[in-house]
Each structure stands twice: as C-alpha cells, then as structure tokens.
Image (cartoon, rainbow, N blue to C red):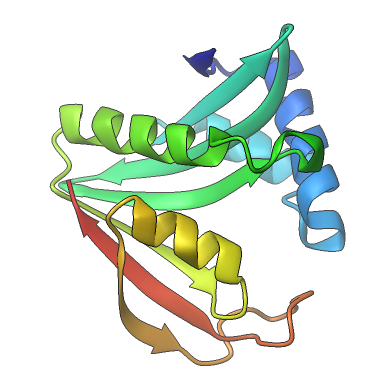
Length: 149
C-alpha cells in the first residue's frame, strides 16, 4: 500500500531505519529526516507492508518544481517495482500540487537508479562533477535529471 506519511516519531524512525539499511554511512540522520518532515514544502510517500515502511520517496514542491530528495527500498523488497510505483505516485502528487517539472541528482555510477528514473520519464541534462562529498560508488559525480510532469 502506498501512503503519504505524517510527521510522527514512528514514521521518522521507520524512514531512518530504511535509510540506514539502504545507505549505511551515507544515510540521512534521524534529525535531518525530522527536519525534512517538519518542512511545509516536503512530502514523504511510503510503501507499507504489514504496517512497516519498506520503501519511500521524499520530495519538495517548490513553486512549479518537484525536487526529489531520496528514493529508497529495503534490499529484500527490491526488483518488485516498488521504487517505480513510489516515484510515479510522487510525480502525480507533485503535479496535483502544481509542479510542472521534476528534478533529481543521482550518482553517475548508480546504473540501477539511473535506469529507474529513465523508465519514469527522467532524462540526463548535465553532470555535476564531485557533487557527492563521500560516496560508496566509484564516482562522486552526479547526473542532474529532469522530467516533465
């Protein structure tokens, strides 16, 4: 089930758990997640299985632009189309909030994520050199990708 999450301690903790499982040392801290939940511009859309968040996408709707923060799915739930469903749902939600374009950054070496975003209508528009201060990938560069909503 896909659900928009409210700013609750339980939801912050569940997002933090998914972050830690997916991104390890590069995960967003619980305090950063809490501040993102507290922002009126931010939305967290989660995929729920048995009352547990197994994946999520976060984004900010700023004027007419959707800025994707993170997309994460627990390793044991990957390759089931969950990330695609989450991204597509978030894009539709952002469009309903008046956004006309979506943008995100993704590590150039994260080929699975790049393919996911391309399948959702995103295209690479530029490369940001040394965008990531630390990275578990062999590259610190990011693609800037955009999509029309």
